[in-house]
Amino acid sequence: MLFVLALSYNQAKLFKVSLVQSNHKNQPKNQHSVAMPRFRLYFFHPKFWGTWLLVSVLYLISWLPFRLQLLLGKGIGKLLYKLVPKRTKVARRNLQLAFPEMPEHEREALIKENYHNMGIGLLETGIAWWWPDWRIRRKLQVEGWEHIANAQAEGKGVFLVLFHFLNLEVHARMVGLVQPGVGLYRPHNNALMEYLQTKGRNRSNKYMVRKKDVRGMLRALDNGELCGYLPDQDYGRSRSVFVPLFAVPDAATTTGTTIFAATANCTTLISTLERLPGTQGYKLRIMPPLNEIPSGDATEDARRINKEVERAVNTMPNMYMWVHRRFKTRPSEDMPSYYK
Image (cartoon, rainbow, N blue to C red; front, side):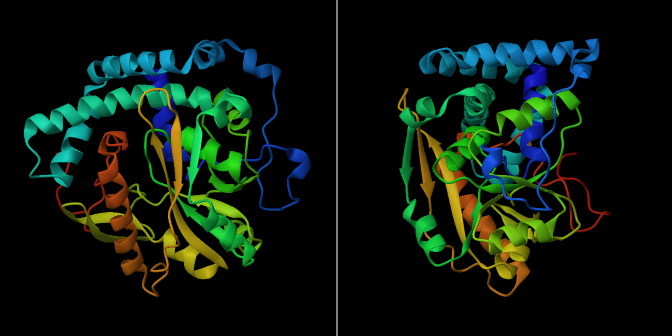
């Protein structure tokens, strides 16, 4: 299960969003789109046997009743809480930085609940990759989809901003099930996982463009596509500004939001996915147009998008990916790390 935790964490890190093509016959002949990987006999090499085993277990679990998957996921989360103390330490430090006035006992309770949701999130990967459309639809409620319809009726692309919540995999699947989209992409280091992961994400969306292919993403937006983007992790000092996030005054925040929102013919929207109580499923929310972005100032845009991150996280703090070292990059390399 440690491998699966690493898989889930790397998925969110390596993919700005997991929006991919579900029907190649409808895929546009776009020079910027990424070709789908092909199955190779090489995948039967012994070096991949561990991957096959763990993915097979995940696949089998995905066909269990939803209620049972929730219980299993919570149990996995409890186990991970004990097995990955380094990540628990990161989560604890993030919460100390973000919510310094939160009592310690509340912080520890939130971390444990966060791990429960992390375990469920791992199993939601199987839901996102392998559940048929009819089963997904039975668990999906949608709110605010008219905002996307209105933008596209005006001939605009949709710059859809998502955040790194633990249900990101199923979030992307559900977005694509209602409106197929496009996303930025970086290959997985494990060739078999690259194939399985891309195949799994090839359920409900359109095509991918490479992570650094800004022109490809802008072209998709100009062509009226829905394009997903995640601006809420620490991507380093390059193309970043330092603006407040929660109680941290200098969180490194990408300026990519401005690059896309200001350059392309698009409407900027924010989407969240709430896991509903019990076995009700999920509520996909599309917020009203974020007209304040672009503002004409990349720093101000970063400040405003962080406010949106805060607003979303405050609604479900136990679902956010606190194990990521969100505040690792400081304005100056001489400044001490927040994590030491």
